[in-house]
Amino acid sequence: MLLSKLFVPITKDLPSEAKIKSHQLMLQTGMIRQSSAGIYSWLPLGYKVMKKIENIVREEQNNIGAQEMLMPTIQSADIWKESGRYDDYGEEMLRISDRQKREMLYGPTNEEQITEIFRSSVKSYKLLPQIFYHIQWKFRDELRPRFGVMRCREFYMKDAYSFDLNESGATLTYNKMFYAYLKTFQRLGLKSIPMKAETGPIGGDLSHEFIILAETGESKIYADKKVFDISIDRYKDEKASLEKMKNDFSKYYAVTDDKYKSTEFDKNVKKENQIETKGIEVGHIFYFGDKYSKSMNCSVDTKEGKKIFVKMGSYGIGVSRLVAAIIEAKYKDNKMKWPKSVSPYDVVIIPSINKNDSTNLTKAKKLYEELKKNSLDVLLDDIDENISNKFKKHDLLGIPFQIIIGSKSSKDLFEFKEVNFESKMLDLNQIIKQIKN
Ligand code: 5CA
Image 1 (cartoon, helix red, strand yellow):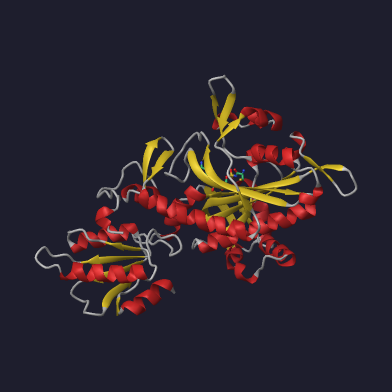
Image 2 (cartoon, rainbow, N blue to C red):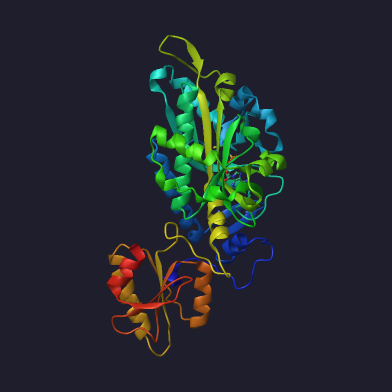
């Protein structure tokens, strides 16, 4: 992609309304544009990053056997009345009525919708277990939308729902999801810690929030620092290994604000290992047994011919929130650095352009074609602008690799720079190897 053809409305000034770095950077680099309070448009650069995140989330859901589907954003109030949540959800729910005066709502989550689908077509234990997920816009009329897409009203979420015959099956499903979440966040370049949490309006009594550390996070957390040393690479998607993984995490104290008790923290964690800080909740998983299946009469016949209410869980990831969360976790000295897995482009070529001499731009275009031939997604900054302004702009954009075509580059050697590292002179093949490695 040529930068001259890409719509990235970068602004020079810091947007005054933004209180945290990710919000500032997303506005400043034209990733998003506010439409009204807590509602945003996603411009090409921001949308590209979000789609990359979405794809990684999708792959890891598919890897544990979850099936993708798509439920609507608008739901009928009737199913929410059945579950009893229509009134409980309060003012966060956006309620609407259609031309026949039927009560509808913009879905804040989909437990009722999926239970309705499941109960109308599954009657036998033989079809269990099942895990479904969709990646869809949600609306919650948050009292105080803030920090850009971090806490907004319209947001993009992956939500999964599981159906099992009994508690032991449901525990295995919960553990699989636990594992898929840790893998997903690892692929996004994030260290996430599962923490015991309250279940709020979703319900149930078993739940973990997946938190990444960030000063600007909204969740206060208390943890034993040893929990950060657990490497998920030791575990496999097998029953015993998954159980061990959850137990290994459970050995260490790690809770969010609402589960915190100072006496327990002091009893279980040595003073020097106590971490008390802030984090961002990027995912949240719940096991709530028959909370919805009972109220909505969702049952299957067992082998013995008995009717039982299915055991359910739900599992969310804030896909749009993750764009901001990754920025918060990764920026350094006012420079952005996207993890390779979600960077909007693999590499940017920055030629120093001089009106009277097109040598650098010609060289850059040739290199651009070569890199594209090698399946790299390349951005070429072909804009006629002072080189120091260009560097400032690319520090903001945070593409992890830069190739600078200026006085240092020769016929076959180019100045190659990984953000936050010293540059070095490399030829085409070495560059491809470095980027793909
Ligand atoms: N039904 C359950 C699981 S699917 C559920 O809705 N869980 S949740 O309320 O915890 O939301 C799941 C994830 O969505 C959160 O972990 C968070 O990452 C994201 N999220 C929730 N509210 C917002 C919001 N207002 N703005 C941006 N992201 C949000």
